[in-house]
Amino acid sequence: MLKTTQSTAVPQTTPENRSAPAFFIDPEGIAMIWRRDMVRLWRQRSRLLGAVARALVWLFALGFGLRGSLGSIAGFNYEQFVFPGVIAMTVIFSGLQSAISIVYDREFGFLKEVQVAPTPRSTLVIGKCLGGASSSTVQALIILVFAPFASVALNPLNVLATVVATFVTALAIAGLGVVIAMWITDFENFGTIQNFITLPLYMFSGAIFPTRLVPPWLHAILLLNPLTYGVNAIRGVLLGYEIASVPLNLAILLGFTVVMMAIAIWMSRREV
Amino acid sequence: MTITVEKLSRSFGEIQAVKGIDLDVDRGETFGFLGPNGAGKSTTIKMLCTLLHPTSGRAWINGYDIEREASQVRQSIGIVFQDPTLDEYLTAEQNLYYHCMIYHTPRKTRDTRIREVLQLVGLDERRKDVVKTFSGGMKRRLEVARGLLHEPQTLFLDEPTVGLDPQTRRSVWEHVLRLRERTGLTIFMTTHYMEEAEYCDRIAIIDHGQIVALDTPAALKRMVGQDLVRLTTSEPERAAAMLEQHTGHAVRREGDAIYVEGENGQALAANLIRQLTLADIDVLGVNVTAPTLEDVFVHLTGRVIRDESASAKDRMGSRLRSRGRLRR
Image (cartoon, rainbow over all chains, first blue to last red; front, side, top):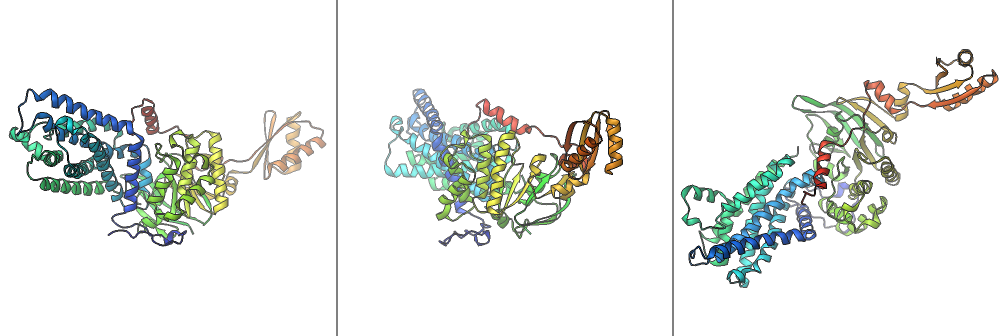
């Protein structure tokens, strides 16, 4: 299944000698897509800061604004309760955004460079999901710095667990983003679709309200939203507030990711 | 044979974009695909680059079947597309390095190879610069360099200079020609610029999805006729009669001008002037024109190839960029 990487030291000049990656997974190709996303993330640091700032506005405005009006939720202040939700927010914005950047790549040509390369179709899909997950995790880590302001206690273990939970959540969201990107062919509608998807996914996820006290129709919607499981997992590891166990939530997210990747690979058939 | 194409066809629904074309391209040859937009050039090049499945027919690139050995085909070709495919937010070097990664070139030689191709297109000094700061011609040259990184046997150039100003076009071509000389690369290119087609060893003229002629530029031009000499003289009537009698060439008179057709227009003109001078007729002006590929195209299709403006998509892209709406 894995392609054999080149191990010979002799420079190979004729294509006949080269290992052509006709296989299902191409680690170096995936690394290329991922690395490009990381370099671009670094080059656009200001956008990163913007995203973090947005999250902090939500945290302080919602958290401290509503704390007085709302009683405690399962023994947590509202700002404690909403803190994991704010991490989930950066995941939904940046994870989705970075996966959907495929639409830009298609419009401005770079996608073609990948499409004609001797690499399987899974390369782009997997690479973009990993890229989205990584950039989301970086942002989540920055937001974790503000945990003390929300009275969320940190220790090495729950930080590590948060990183894992965030990464897995972002993987699922990026998977969804890649499917959306494959589905959108009209660049003009891109902004509309993005707004139409990002905000509802965030609002209907339990990021900002407890899922236990909602009417059944809303609960059904929450269960269909992958971010709900991400919020559950992050809240579980950070606050110990669990709705179903953390591993179960993560397993659901991973399952969702695999399904999304499969759909995306199927959608990115050769003829575009 | 580097490229072999047999009865290659492609339909999009009811529309037959490419209708069973056949061609062979030799190793080291520069082969041009000339035709107006919508003639089937891009569809053909997409099929050859394994981006598009043919509806029927077969083709082999560097000995690999485009349908069954797509991966080997891809590894053995370099492609420069009509529209830019660089990441403008990265440096030249980064763009090239990523290409090495996805083409799996040997790690140890990557850095030297990157420097080599950058020198080849004269961009070595700009290697650390972000591509966004490059001019249109520099970007295109960088794309050519990138297409060569993995040492392909065949380079595909799809309208390599479309959208560039004439001066930049020439500079891109200088680099491509030098490249051909140094590497012995096979080049397959599409164009609708007649001047560019002249650089090719052989040209296929394609119209409505069919190859209507395939030969060297010189041979194609012979199809439409010979060189044309236009003379203006002091006594047009007498001059025309005299030349008709003595030269054996067909002579046509239009007002003050006399037209004579023949091979090697320069020598013919010199000869005509001598004859006229001997007959005491003053030659006031001479003009020699050779048939152009444009003439060939008109002759074959009854139409003129127009220089198309930028596609609607390009225009939209630049509009959005200028509005600063694009986040990348």
